[in-house]
Structures are given as structure tokens and as C-alpha cells.
Image 1 (cartoon, protein in one colour):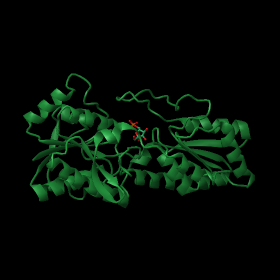
Image 2 (tube, rainbow, N blue to C red; image 1 turned 90 degrees about the vertical axis):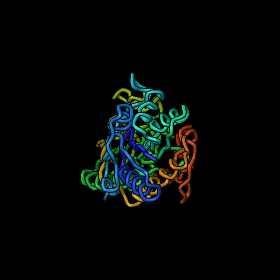
Image 3 (tube, protein in one colour; image 1 turned 30 degrees about the vertical axis):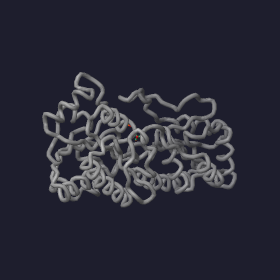
Image 4 (cartoon, helix red, strand yellow; image 1 turned 135 degrees about the vertical axis):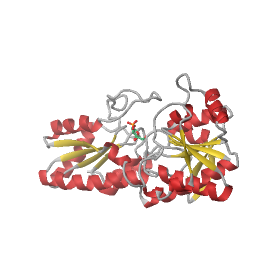
Length: 342
Ligand code: F6P
């Protein structure tokens, strides 16, 4: 079998480990050939690909980013988009299967292609950990490690200056990164998209911390919607899937906190640092297992399925299930963390 691999959407640590796992397993177990499409769906639409053999994936599991490049190109957009055009590229280059490694946007497009009869299997990837039908996605563990270390560092400078610092993390409309980072770093308040909170409540937590002589640390998810706001803060337009680009809520919150409490307050957005650098050992293992399983799924012609982590097992689930609704932080998990706020 000749299998094409692509990495699409926002990158995350572990993508290369998936590619390595898929290629090594496919080569050894099935004698498969692999190609890698450059820059996600763009490479597939333009028939822009490179051969991937076992030598080209050597030592890759610890390497951040993706050797194939990524983009947010939607395979249904533009004159070369759509299932018919994509199918023609696969046929003319004798590619029998596509392994699409991506998040919600990528897998939604992959599902549409599979529904149209194309041979596509999916691998879940996102630092946001917001994909349903998998317990964890690789990239999340690394992002939380990076963000936790950053908050640990921010805490020392906050204490020196007796400031409140609002730290913004990624996560889109799910608060997993904020919840885990905030708990791990002992933040005094965690603000997530799943739970709207008033600025007055945030100030109560901040003031209580200050009254004990500590420097308040607030971890906020980029998708947090404060009471009185109708949607998450966004001032960077839409992405190619028509989703608002989020970010900037920490800059909104810090002056409001300072104004109401008189405590000097600053903001820091951790941004792309959360997606960069080497994957954690946990993410390397998960990504490698998913890569191996994706080759098995392709060889078994399990089109329209996504490999997924359930408990400790790697299983196959339908992409429809994986993309139906995002996996959000349950209220009980938030309330458990909130027991320690203030
Ligand atoms: O989905 C991963 C993610 O990093 C989100 O947390 C963030 O909102 C978004 O991607 C940023 O996207 P881009 O790389 O297109 O700016």
C-alpha cells in the first residue's frame, strides 16, 4: 500500500513521533510505501509531497514541530479543493490511503472526504485536548508542562514586585490547558471558557491573596467569557475555517483588576511557546502508539475512523463521533479546582 501522511492545523509537539511510528511500523509490518504531503491539505491539493522512508524518520520522536510543515488550508476551499479534485490527485499518484493528523478543523474536513468515499484515517492532535472520543491528545501534556514552568517563573517576579499577574494560556473554547496549568502551578484563580465569572469575583480572589501578603496569580484561558461579555475576546479576525482567532483576554482583565483593587496588575500571554520545542516523554509515547495504530487502520481500510486513546488502550472510533462536539472541562472538575482559589 502507498500511504500519504499530512499534518494540518496548528502544530504541536509529537507530530513527528506519529510520522515516525506510522512509517516504521508500515515499512516493517506491511512493506508499505509512504509519502508526506507538505503543509497539510495544501500539499495534497497541489500534489506536493516527498517520499518518507525509514531513514527519513530516524530520531524524529523527540523533534518538535513537523517535518512536513502545516497549514490551516481547508481542502474544500478554492479551485483545487473538494473531494473530486483530491481524489484525482490520489489516483494519479497511486496513493491508496491518507493519514490526516490534525485537530477539530482537520478531522472535520477529513470526515467530509471520507464520507465522499476517500480513503482517509485520522490521528487526533491538539494542545487544546478538546477532541471528543479520545481521552487525551498528544501535545497537551507538553503544553501544560511548558505553561506550568512559565507560571512558576512568573510567580517569583510577581512576588518580588507584589504584583498581580494574569497569565493567558491557549485552548480555544476549552479550558483544559488553563485548568491543568493552574492546578499544577497553584494559581489563585483559574478562568476557563466553560464557566463565566464576574470581574467582581475575580477581584475577591485577588484581594484575598494580597491580604495574606502574597502576589496573586490568575491563569486565564484565551476563550474565557467574563460575565457581561457575549463571546470570547477576539481582535485578530477569523481563521480559514471561519473560527475567530482568540487571544488578548489577559490584557483586558489586568487593568480591570487594578482599577477595582488598586493592586498593580500585569498580563502575560504565553502564546506559541506552548506549542514549541521537544515533546514530553508522555506525548512521545502516545504519539508513537497512535502513529503505529494509524498504519494498521489504513491497512485494514478503516476509512472515516480516527485512532484514539481510551483508558490505556489505543482504539478506532468514527471521525463523526470525534468531531461532533468538543470535549469541554466538566463543571465538577472546575469546581474541584475552585475549592483552592483565593
Ligand atoms: O488549536 C491549537 C491552538 O494553538 C489554539 O490553542 C489557538 O487558539 C490556535 O491554535 C492558534 O492558532 P494559529 O496558530 O492559527 O494562530
